[in-house]
Amino acid sequence: MSNETFSDLEGLRIAIEIEARGCEFYQQAYEKAQKAEHKDTFILLKMRKFIIRRSLPRSLIN
Image (cartoon, rainbow, N blue to C red; front, side, top):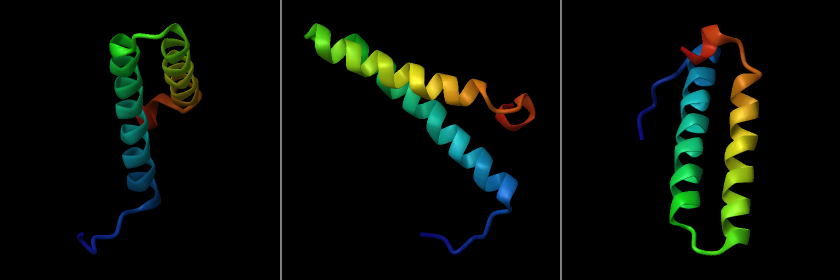
């Protein structure tokens, strides 16, 4: 692991990217899930991440 330091803004942008990847992961898991309760869980987790992301200023997301 690198000892590189990030500014607060860079750290926040990295965190936002991780959240975006989480949305993609939950979408793929939803599509592959067989049971309805599993699909429900994955779509709820995806929506939670989507809502969090939408609450952030656009300048941080782009």
